[in-house]
Image (cartoon, rainbow, N blue to C red; front, side, top):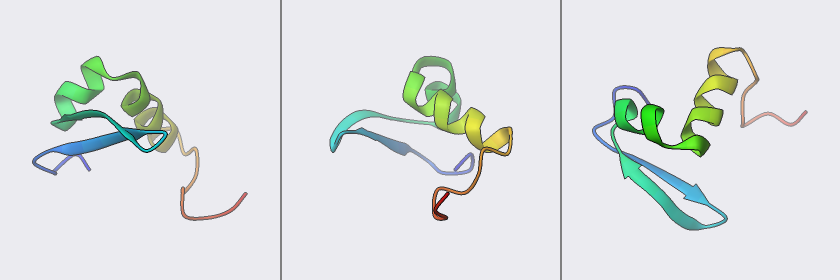
Length: 49
């Protein structure tokens, strides 16, 4: 996602944010949480627990 032009963040089916990786990482709590979970090896969202 870091290389995407823009990233769309959804919250309960509604647009929460639409921006670059850098801006979302600084300003969007949902994106920060997702990013941190992936960086720390929090798992793959496509696999069930």
